[in-house]
Length: 503
Image 1 (cartoon, rainbow, N blue to C red):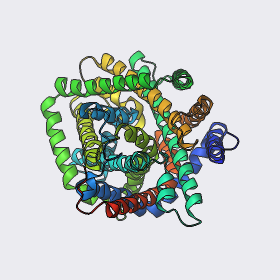
Image 2: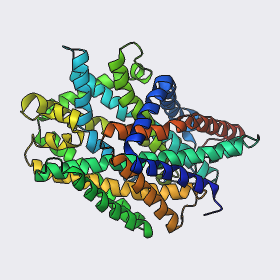
Image 3: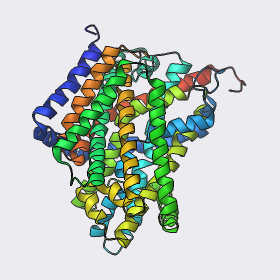
Image 4: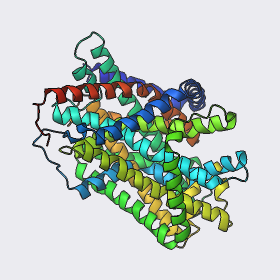
């Protein structure tokens, strides 16, 4: 451990953030918000350009001749059936964020758009923005990272870490090794900050659910700390043993609960209104996709600029923060598939699910706001962690579905943090697929400390700013990985015997 400078540097950087956050929460929050605002103001164009060009690249790869290249040797075939593979993809992409923001985000966008553009179709615009934030761009960012990891690990036999493409494709030059080392470091840092932020948001969600179920009126800091303490025990203990199969089972249980909730709302709720909203929002999303992909709202006034930075830009860097973590998981279950199969499964299927998810939860939120006395818009603006539970109360069995939501959120948190600690340990030990228990435990403690620091802010907006601060540097690494990947693919195509058909 003492001979591993990457591990020591990464632990030091994340530990400093955690320590500052615990000792001076207000100071960390103010610093993160100020720095992120400055970065977003000056680099919004670059972030959106990188994210949108990644979408173009991933879709082009799927339908180009490179789509036949297999993620593994030419003789490898998929380890899992297509159904099992897609089910596991849902488990990777389905997280506490969907539970937290399913109704809260569309209602929040609706409030601002209705104020700025009175008399217009605010609900429709709100759904289009929400879909844009969670569908193709998110999954293409995940996909390109997973593609790079899978290609070099299984086709080229290299370590499955972020710096590998740089080392392999740009073998000459004094800059290669230090840049690759920095890429590995930034990936670790982005994962740690991003997962810790999701941990804090998840605690807010579970606290809100318990408060709603038992009428605790927010529960205060005592309940929040109690939830955090129980969660820490739940994810630190599994790190001491090999529970990979058990973690997969827990993740699948959480996914099934979330799917059942969505189907329940669709069938028991105002089905025709929800389906109308889904069809309308999907059409609006597809028709405005190109415009939204390159929109930075420079001429819409300060209110729209701040809203764009706080949501869309923040999401783009949030997906980038999660990309190395999700990428490792997706890569490991995708060995043997062609690039075309990979993209069709990893990008389109989860994106379609996200469109339905927000169509159902967002549509129910709008229905509750228009047809009940529940203050769902005010709750979405002031207590977003309670929004899902308020919306569920508009339907029968509100307490039961609320309890299911709390259970799903807790399970997603446990499995995500356990998996993140494993990936961090693997990355920081040079790609070791069986990292030492002590390294996993150290990362588990670091994630807990970072999560505590963000949780103490008590503000999801601040948490998103801290996540962005950790992920922004990695935005500059993604284009380099894409160039390295294309360079190696092109070389492989040229090296293939003329006339040989790829399997």
